[in-house]
Length: 249
Image (cartoon, rainbow, N blue to C red; front, side, top):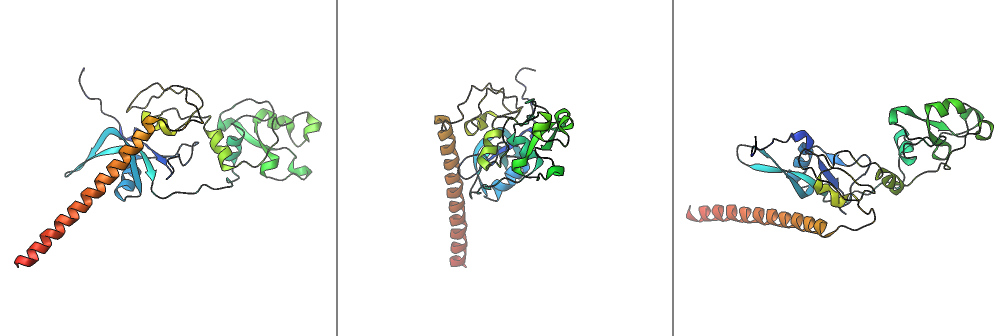
């Protein structure tokens, strides 16, 4: 009915987690926390709440709006060398077969040794590439010059920044509007989050946070100051009551 408030499932209210420098901890997979973890971290004062949903959880004594963007108070340094895993190999190669250049779903990909292990090849960044099952089967244990299959790009060990850049090419399907100023995607995104649905314009991946982002940071800082001021005043009030009680007794 018109005017009736549509309830938002709490499971859809994830919080975007930023590092202390207000950059996402990771782009792919995007650093998201369930609302329970975000609320717990905020209660323990491990994060600053930068933005909130129009959704609240209630207890007998208080109401708390769910955070949509949080920033860690302590900076977490990123690993200089990413772990050598199957997923990171796929991400480095943009989930594309390096022989036929086709893009496939993860379940349809495997990794291939450019120099086969039977020929002395090692399982390392500079000898492993992403391949589809058809190309992997066609290459078998042959050398590239024997089968005519050569990787489109010479494999190498990526940096953490390389994987972040690759991850930005795969934006999440659901994107909340409060996350936009912290995610500089290269393509146009249609946001379908249950909490807010907006159409985002193409974003420059190299641009700096705009006025809206700075305003969000200012709001987060003001909330933090107000919270700490309220806590200080409450402690002062309780101390005064205890002091006056001791004086009268």
